[in-house]
Image (cartoon, rainbow, N blue to C red; front, side, top):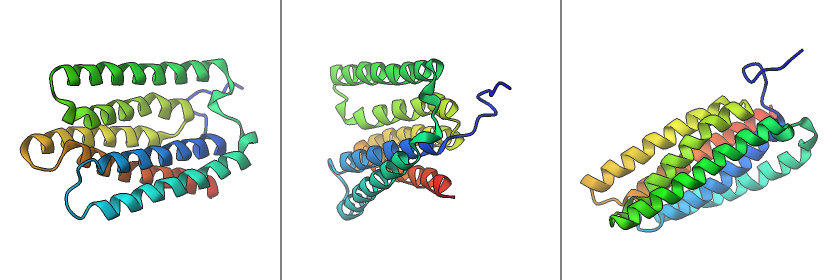
Length: 183
């Protein structure tokens, strides 16, 4: 019997590894939000960063314990999809960073990178059979747009919005993935 992408279930290993990656990413985004946060944001952002680290450690242990459960990366097709998604992400980030720097709009780097990161979660959600990863990607893209608008019309920096809200989304979906493994 052939198992298709639509019928395949996420493995404990893939859920755990994704939770670890999301935890690390949350730590990075909460850190980026501290570039120039509004008054009163530093403590919650620090707590968010610490939470991301804790999740990454717990997810790493979970991945190690479930390593034999298999992975979408076990076959060449899965690795190819992953490499294309991550390669496209890296190229898009680099092109956007250069373009924003050339036009003097470096304040919008965080929203650009968050948009690209979120977008690359969509094919990875299919690859790993983790539908929630696709939803996280869409939410990150929405946050990136909100961060741009806020940066244009308000005094809060785009990096604070993208980093803070992006970090919250990443933590939430990392916790969800871990809970799914532990059930």
